[in-house]
Amino acid sequence: MNNELLEALDVLEKEKDISKETLLEAIENSLVTACKNHFGKSDNVKVIVNAQTGDFHVWAEKTVVEEVEDPVMEISLANAKLIDSIYEIGDVVNVEIQSKEFGRIATQNAKNVILQKIREEERKVVYNQYYGKERDVVTGIVQRYIGNNISINLGKADAILNEKEQVKGEVFQPTERIKVYILEVKNTSKGPKIMVSRTHPELVKRLFESEVTEVKEGIVEIRSISREAGSRTKIAVYSNDPDVDPVGACVGMNGARVNAIVNELRGEKIDIINWNENPAMLIENALSPAKVISVIADDEEKTAKVVVPDYQLSLAIGREGQNARLAARLTGFKIDIKSETQARESGDFMDYEDYEDYEEDYDDYGLEDEGGFREEAGLEDEGGFGEEAGLEDEGGFGEEAGLEERVCLEEDEIGMSEEMTETDAMAASMEFDLSLEEAQAAFARESEE
Image (cartoon, rainbow, N blue to C red):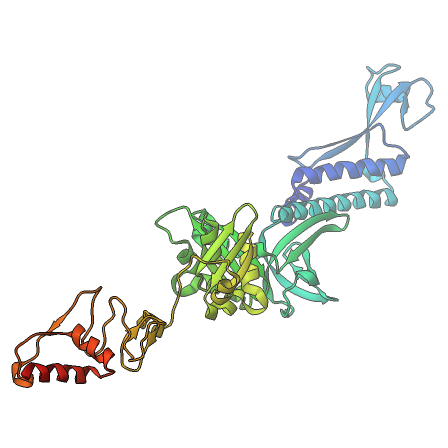
């Protein structure tokens, strides 16, 4: 039993994650290669390795002939009889080859075959491992800068963070641990080539999956995501459980969950909104924190017209149009944002609530004269009295829709008990160009006489 060989195979299997069967196959191939280098050909060589004991045997199949012309492929009858007396002309004899007979060059070649096979299998294992993690987030250690690119050690392989996949303004120090998103894994002759990113929107989604249990379990879904790396990200979330608040689940208690992701992204702002199947409602949510007056969305054309209050226009558009741009990417709609004043002037929106100033709300009819009489514009006589159905002056005299109000004058003030209508006094005032008080006094004197 070859215990040393078995122990070596066990160590390689644990360290390199290469199966023992693959290593035994490599040993078989190396012995065949050694035979070819030693004898010049190996077409008739057979190698048998016992996986349980580690013992191996190399056999050369030779044909029994009377006269040997090719000693590698043929054996004489006399020599075959020495092995076993049953052999006759034309039989095939298995002649054992001792590996000790191999020369130095043949032994070195066999060694190289084994090492090459181990390296190939190691690269294959690493490739399969990281190919399975493609489109996922892994933690790596920054090694060094290679020009504008960054080499990151992922454990068993190195990855390249290209300049275009780096967040503008991020600077890393060697040995710093960062999370990266695996974009692509290619299998090359020198090993797997792994491309990673820090700007991909899926990086934020994977971070939420790792940080938020509800997202990982599928209770809360991230339906859409738009990102401008290093600045702001918007995500739309939806809950499959009516008892679970999707936004609250992603934010966490006191913002613990979302803050952990913000810290990993070096302070990048994250807006979390509720997903809605109604495009208008979704667009309104996507434009948060800005308030929206109205949204008219065309689902076929994928366009939307949005009206916001005048003081919210800059907030809805965002710095350099960022908020509107992210909302458009999040919803898939081309969004046209106008202020309330702009919408009024363009005539695009005539069905929304008309906001008026406080004075206009108070003065229903718009104008007021010096005498305190409210009047409809354009209805005023020379005496300063304006009359319109339902209008009343400050002196308490007024008519409601042609109805006449009678005024009782006190007997001790004017010395009369007769009743006088206000209409009579006003008619006299207008005919003789008298004030209302003078007309009333004239009627009083006439009654005394």
